[in-house]
Image 1 (spheres, rainbow, N blue to C red):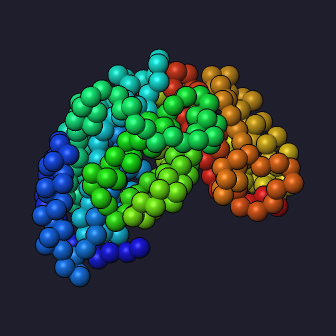
Image 2: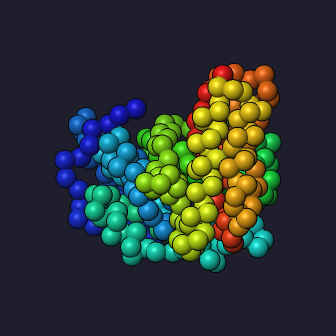
Amino acid sequence: MTFSSRPSAPATPVVLTTVAEVRSALAAGRAGDSASDAGIALVPTMGALHDGHLSLVRRARELAGTVVVSIFVNPLQFGAGEDLDAYPRTLDADLAALAAEGVEYVFAPTAREMYPSGPSETRVTAGHIGTLLEGATRPGHFDGMLTVVAKLFNIVRPDVAVFGQKDAQQVFLVRRMVDELNLPLAIEVVPTVRESDGLALSSRNRFLDAGARRAALALSGALQAADAAASDGLVELLAEATANFGDHDDVTLDYLVVVDPASFLPVDEHFRGPAIALVAARVGATRLIDNTPITLG
């Protein structure tokens, strides 16, 4: 799905903080749409934007005439003891970055606006896949994620929503939700953006000191090893990738697994074809995830 880009954009985004404001602003824009200026792209974020987020925004600008970026730290995605209060909130810097990308609208609601009666009793459930991997470590996380994404889709009514491949399990679940609930939009996925040394960009990278930053390269190193060993089969792949963590005492591996992209279930040693290698580890006090597409031979 491709839409024509608007030739010019406001110097600063219009910040919308209520559902009514979003619907009013976008209804006015839809009323003025022409064949050469059509389509709304949504980029859902929790803020603390980095170049990975901005790559999503750039892709959104290529796909649609109007770009909406949501910035909302969704409490439903955080369980007991997780870092809801510590999650970085950098709205002024985010707005400056989005202004440079020509974003028209930023939807930055409060939790009370999104959940006026408190935590939503009506939720989208992620099913069995939502209990695996990240879902096993963070029970209920994916139910909260899907619920807020469904709300954002209903509020903004985008033609396309743009996500990053770094959150591969999230992407799988969002795509499945859109398909199974017949939601009228396309999902676009942008490859993971990395530092020059291979570290995947993440809002949590700011919590890494210099030593932890170096140690964090164990994740991308493991994925590189997995890719290099993919033609030798699953057993050799996992052995080579896991060995990459041997020299990092300050990195605690949570999981290293290969899944079938069609089901997001772990593959067995007989599997051949396209797959996704996923890794999660705690570097000091900071938990990081990463993944890469591979082909098992």
